[in-house]
Length: 113
Image 1 (cartoon, one colour):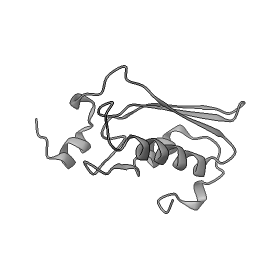
Image 2 (cartoon, rainbow, N blue to C red; image 1 turned 120 degrees about the vertical axis):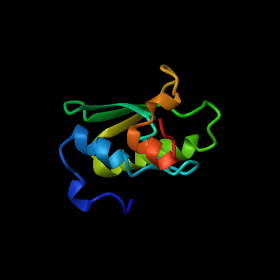
Image 3 (tube, one colour; image 1 turned 90 degrees about the vertical axis):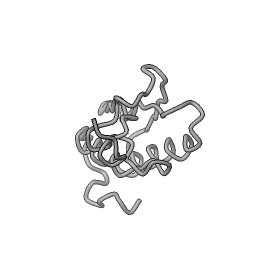
């Protein structure tokens, strides 16, 4: 995890920081990070129970990079918060669509309105 700053390891749960760190995970098929692609729906941290849940989707149920992306998210969060149990929850509702891509993601993909 060379993208993870050592100063973040063992930090107290910080939702904004985690969202920013999730941007370091790129979908290798389209070369845009999973946040700007709109794949990450929610990040929840439970300090009392020491759990972090990332709710996300994929561009399609048959995504060939599914295992890679889910494992990358789990590995990143586990590295940042080794004292927490990490849950990556894959959901299909709402279904992903191109409108979920951020403006930055659209620029990186060459999609112009």
